[in-house]
Image (cartoon, rainbow over all chains, first blue to last red; front, side, top):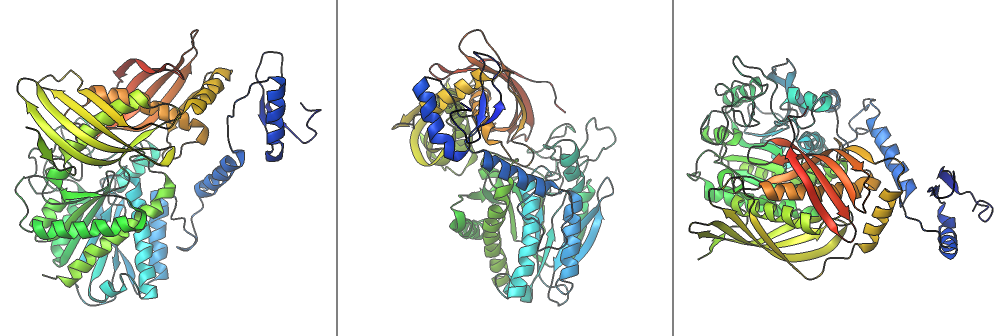
Length: 379
Length: 220
């Protein structure tokens, strides 16, 4: 072969003896001729890798992505990659430093392992304006949510700078965004167990670690739809708000007193959900919430055709007690929604990084519908 | 006497997941991965002394041929009371699925030509990456986990393959390929991630068969 094909054939598994296979990387321009030659002499072959260059390109991108140098500013930050907690916290500081008149960082508490719980506040002024709350990453393995939260933060700043999109909302309302709502769990998904969901608390008498932060709220706490077993992924914890990650938000919401829309973001399943999860009794505002969800889902779908189902938690996904938006709704925050982002199970929690930005972009359209409705229907 | 179900409500979605598991086991392969695009219609019939039967109209897509759309109907019968028996599933695919003969043969030849038995882990990895040459293995894991999902589905579960933790090829003296998988299944209602060991035999003409499967001990 080497004598017939003067142009390099690159043997990845060199010829050793008769009967043993040989692997060859074939330059594109030799491909046709080599295939024809093998056929003519009756040598069978199979293609192991269609496009080596594509693999190399992917690997190089991956190496650039994974080279753990912190980005220097939010323009060079890679939104199409998954980041560590340090990288996200560094992003927040850069965003604040670049936009001091719009963005500030609040510490609303500390996690069980003493990590700071940070909320970004986007405000053009006023005093205690009616506000929108968005949280991502309350379940740590749902990586596309924290990654989307980072994108949302940048998007808000960009819209404001270009006087488009949510700029008009920011004239009369503030936006609060908690990107890493469960930092202990998130760190654990990086270091130890990619599938970790809960917090990392260890309560007296509990055999296992961690409480499901979306079963720990004081709405139907402990009812059917959560587990009393600490080893369960839906363990509700020893009492409501036992988790500092939850209590800090409860305290914030109560002391703020003027939050009008509350959105908690999860993955996966492609659903937009409203209360209740702990009871089959429909929410008093169900009709309005259902219609608003329909509009939000239509907006989301308009971008890439991603289809979402929508409805109350208990009819659409399962009975769940002690969940976030059941509590916020019962506090009087009418526009309380939970999202379950991409996908529907093909990759599940392990959503390819290249889907982060499309997911964030489409979700943002739905969020804008909800925010605009809240702005136009203040109560 | 079959009751119409809203496709957006969870009972229909759970039955569809069971049907999809069964269909992947039956018709999936290294060159074909079927995904549920849309649940068009669902009805449920409660049969006295037997169980609950779901009638589904599904729209599927081959992940390797995104523009393809295949319609199918499925019947899923969950037996009353019996927690240890798998639901009876029947699926009828309308029209033809794209042939995978060539891809199957190429994959078969490649594996047979390997000197060392193939070993891989974490497919996809934490970032959702699947190396292209391992995509056929990923799709065979769908076949293997499809069997486990079908066998273990109830009206109170919705199972998906979360990750292939480990796969090891085992060379055989007969013509089948054998892959020993450890897969992580995500159960939506309990939110548990459950490790399962599954041994899959596959041959391009004979198709796939799970020779053994069992829930593995608690993982890492």
